[in-house]
Image 1 (cartoon, rainbow, N blue to C red):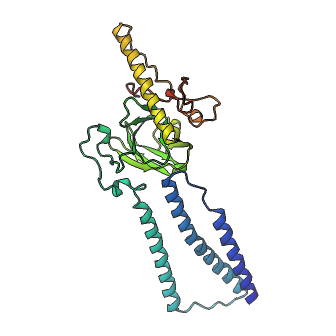
Image 2: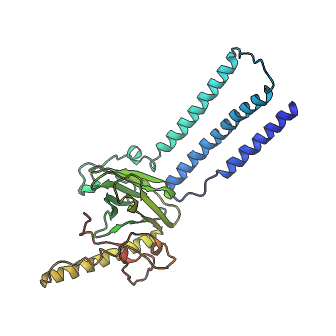
Image 3: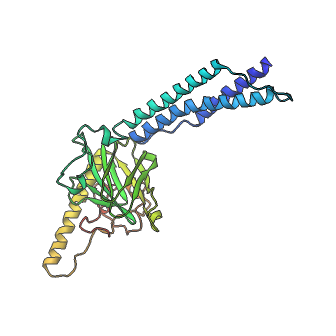
Length: 323
């Protein structure tokens, strides 16, 4: 019997070790994802031994009393009852404290954690009710959802707007103020650990810091109608220098487009031409990050410049809004 118990104990230890190694998460691509992965790993290290202990007791009991045709009722055992009550309380306390530590982190709950709190009476409408950055170098982006697409406006950067492609710098705080023009939507980027409902007439803030360059897909996680499946796009993480270069190219291109449109209006040429409205998609074979990002069905507009990864054609004319 002792030999059987030793074998079962050794097998249990091997199973726990294997499951712990097999479920170790990959390296996180953002601060948010790292926090979530660390919490899941802590909970997993608690849940696995607990589950295996329960399973061990079940199988041991089945084997030990397999030939018992006249089982006796279990007698009261206060020591056992106190033990499992105390152990359960300790486990629940650990889970609660670990979860609260993550929830209180400013990257997970920026509304609660930010010292300055929500803005009131901001000069820009989209900032009203959003959380102010506590870092002057942070990037602020307004994410507007609509049936059925996304529009991203870069605060402080005149005429810089993109659709279905969100470009952010690496290793820099980013505040994404999420709202909706019509029905309830939800911004969800699983690889970056970002998820936030988009409510009509209200703004909720996502705070993040990407730690690895790349292209990460995002989706609408709230069913919003017949075009729900089309509400996808890419979060493109680039270096800080590359991000500044990209923003500068967007401003220059949009300023040129606005001047051309004004000249045409002055000459009585009729309706204004949206030169940039369709330049939101890269469909070529370039291996660079922004050239491989998925951006819907708009036509590609090629541009030349010193930085082929961050092309001016990624922006759309902010004066043309989707219905």
